[in-house]
View 1: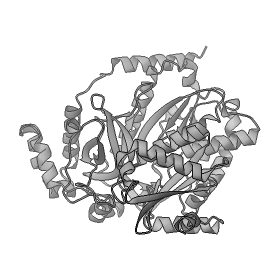
View 2: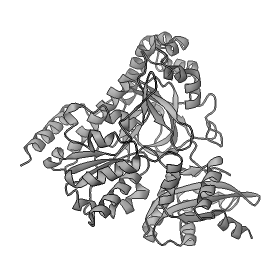
View 3: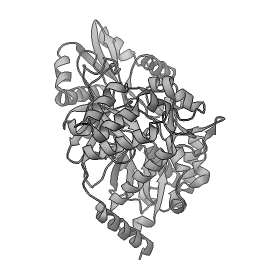
Length: 527
């Protein structure tokens, strides 16, 4: 009998039972907001924007007077503005800039659209907040009745960035996954894989090799990571040990905790590597904070973390608030948690215990349950296509690929879309990463048909200004090879779903060097 496992499972169930199951979202957020302002009121940022006055309105003001004042006083910041105005001084070792004290750690985040690294401060308060939310997520496992007690004695494989951080005179920097893994509590060390030594490895290819060599020695029950890299690792392990499925190596694997990108396009190929079904749990952990996670089986969305160092604002994602290139306007309409509506798309603003204030994280979300504060990620503010009013979101793209791959019985490992000028109007060019025999024309027709069903605006524009779509099928390894060439090979990096501006030419030039003429299909069609 798994004695330790039974004890852990009972403890988790007991803790979950005594926790309050319902909180008032608006009140929880107001409380978080007040705590953030109390902590930061004596910083340079807090002094400039008179946090004392806003705090007085939290206590003595009417209704949402505090929020109206906050919205009128503090500007919205994207990364470039936040860094240029404030965070560059924090990075240089400045004290009490946007959060009390000096910041020791910075997460390097390039997202999927910026070439240069972003330096996101990770304060002690944020590290503690991420750990608290991680524990809360573990507690939700008691709601998954199919998970046996023995699971709680198995290993957690966390595939992330190197825990060997770079020291830059006054701070350490690296992937957020590397920063958090380097701070894992002592009691968790016996469960944590790949262990300290391999986790320190900076060479991503070598790290995968070392994990593969050790894989059979570990009894893994949970895996955590970005779907594409976990899938690559499992394929590598299966090939190395000459077995049919990952369960031949890890028979007790029962849970995959994923995040970073939508899992649906990967699911078909992923499940080919399994010997039996496992439980999937989705998380929303960004460099700026642990934002949401799936709290119960079969949940459609993830529940926002409302009471742990993050204050949210929601910007309706429409032409009023964003330009055609996805840039936010100077004074956008913003809403608090109680003012949102289900089914509508919002860009997310964060105010955090790492000293981010009204910060545009770049993600768009949709509420699937306002009562439970549950969201799904629909894409990025700059990763959508609307050349002529088609308003094609990443959510639409993911769903279309999922449906097409299922219908055609093909495994689509990666994909990206570029909006292009075509004749005097416009077209979309899809790049599909698959290692299966694929008829590009059939893929094209199926994607086009699915998108017309999913998006009314797309269907209208396909009859007018969006004159055609093109599909180029390439080996999936080329997507990763391009990322490697950009220095973005690793667990926290994703290939951009939408290619814009210089990235289109860069990608097509790369493909041409690999012997693939991406423009050939368009040229033939134009003739």
